Length: 436
Image (tube, rainbow, N blue to C red; front, top):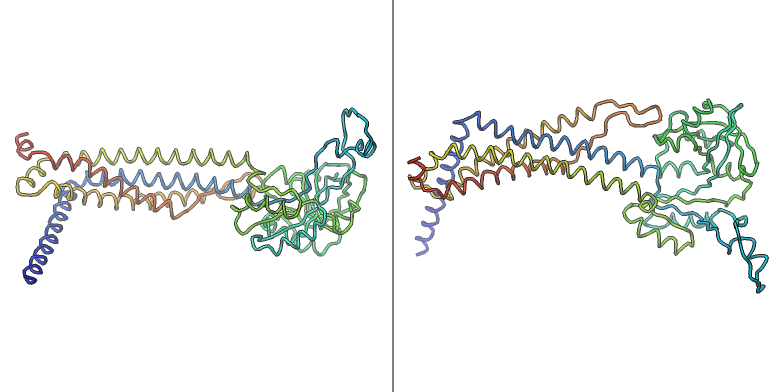
């Protein structure tokens, strides 16, 4: 009994292999008998997948560049002293404190308050030990006037530990002249925005007089210039050491106004910001909240990207379906002969499914190569958005997921395009086909 079962299985296995081999040979004959039609079907897949890869690579590259440009100058979490103007903060409170009088306040002005973060340096040291924090940069920011010869410009100066700032925002790559080490070696030095330096007609080595809104003046030496590509920053901002800015503002060594924090995972900023605020009693703002309007534009841009590439794939899918349908219609007499000689409907479907898979794999592979090559050439196109922009080549993204999606869609679309009409053809009576 067991010998009979094994023998039967061997015969079944052998017949299955032979059946598949025969189906493959018939599919191969169909493909090679009308080479022009086969090539046309392959080119339909190739064009669709090639354009998909090119479009999504370019559009994703642009989106990634804009996102990186925003994030490279934005801390994941920013801690600062949030001031609010109210009667509680005005001088009226001091005058009428504890006295039961009714006072009407018009055009109230806040009393003189310090902008610094209380115990700021202690908070910085505590944050450095937090396992979620990748880097911390304390800052002292102030509005100033830059005076160079007869030119006087309004701007801002940021007192920083330049090594901490470089770790968070990669200042080194943004330098147009000079080095970070020059700031560390110069007692009253500063790194000036390239746009601001151009307006002042000042260069590395020149000395610029800096005046605070309170009238304090100090002469600083330009040791380097930087350009972020953001005109709103490059035309107004300079870096100096925290000690230098504290001297300009006549503040004590622990006086800081901002703490910039980068996390190991930027996606956790929205969750950690309220925890830091509750723990340290300092206003903490995550990068998503600070850039809500910009992020909305990114969402719209990404949505447009997916609409365009999806439309492209749908159009390519219909093209592939039409080509495969025409191919199967041309083979109706062959289908009738095959069915008349004993081939079942499932065998007919298998024959055309093999053809669809071959066309899909070859066409999609060629499309990936063409799309990837075109994307590479686009990435080599030189662009010039001015001397303050760091972009030198057109931004193009090369993500493996795009290529995997392309070949899966190409093969899947051709299989579906071959399956639907072949199932319909498999159910037709061969006598009706032969009679015409």
